[in-house]
Image 1: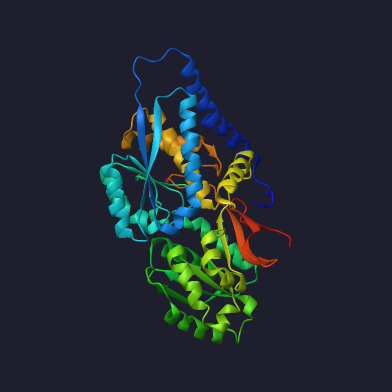
Image 2: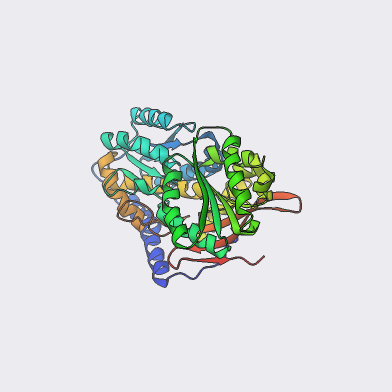
Length: 420
């Protein structure tokens, strides 16, 4: 995806390479060896096994669909080549931006016999669904939930995204590197955005960044013109103290509220002069589709989990682009790995049982090096190592698109900015 090579600790590379062989090559070799050996007296797993997929919103489906199709093909080919009498099917449901519907759709999947659900993309939905899956002993494996409020040891939620305490560090570093001296924040009142705001606030204050205004809004509203009137007034006053390049406007939330935030702030000329930041939605095609001109005007800048540069990722990205016509968004990368981890956990558990999958999944994730890199989890079941690409929407040769402008390494707390 054009990111710069970043110097990382050699032991991570060595370890990742080792576990890659164990997780994919080693496991394939193991099952392959079993396929050529005399068959066991009884096979614990056979037939078609369901894996649930719970999408947060219709807009999340498009970028992930090619990756889901690839995962289905690759996992089932793996089972076939290994001589296993197992085939995985994916059952998909959509919460349509509603936490209430997320619970209902999860119940639907569980009613169809699902013991592991990949999703939801949104922390608010994971939070709503967690009591249900815990009670029913169904594993929830999210590709992008990151609220610190869900970083809980021993629960039935695992996440392939680092939690927001790591995101806040990246935002603080980006703010300082870009020379911002003041920020205004609009955040959706839901688990992900509120959690990120609570993490960022003390980091900004401790770094000497003035917080001009912070405003929580209803995430289900479709326009925020009135709310941005207050932000506009505060920005006008701050412009007597700071230049436009020293003030950043941060929007925290998911797709649902952020796009109407962008179209609403566009009603205020002074806000269009500022650089506007999102959180972890860098590279998402929906922003270009629904608010591309506005994003280009405000130099819309966001980050997203950055997959490790590897031959495995390059192969995946090439296949994905051939299917979708554009580079893979990070949730597509992560959902591919989520589906593999789910399938491998089921195979190694040797029975389709939520408790058995729950016990084996962290071990599988620790050994697995996927298209997103090493998926080792921490004690809370969240991805351990944070790395983020930093994106900006640009208009070049008449075309509006995302461009990677930097790479954040959580080990060193440094950003490697690309040279323009």
